Image (cartoon, rainbow, N blue to C red; front, top):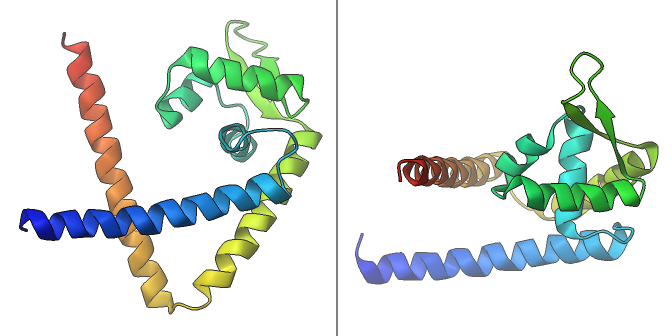
Length: 157
């Protein structure tokens, strides 16, 4: 693929991605979030979906260091959305669990996102939706693979 064509594709991708991400973020922020950022909502979402996860798992998922995740989790704990639970067998292990209040915020957010996205997906055929998601998943997998390679390269030095 020549450079100009690639540049045009990248420009189209940026316009579509940034527009849709901005709209979803605005919707969730406006209608759902109770004094938490979209990043905190994403952390709350993961903790709710995968109970008993640990901060190191979240850091890997988000591509940030453990101290950044710890700070976000601490804010969620202070707001009553998440609690830390120590492993009875090994007290060094700390698991993260969403509270009832946190699950309520998560559910409200998911309902709004489902409604928002459904309004647009219903205009597409199942094949178009499947194709779109397949391509998006492929891009995500490629990004994750390259990121893992970069982390591996950093350890070599």
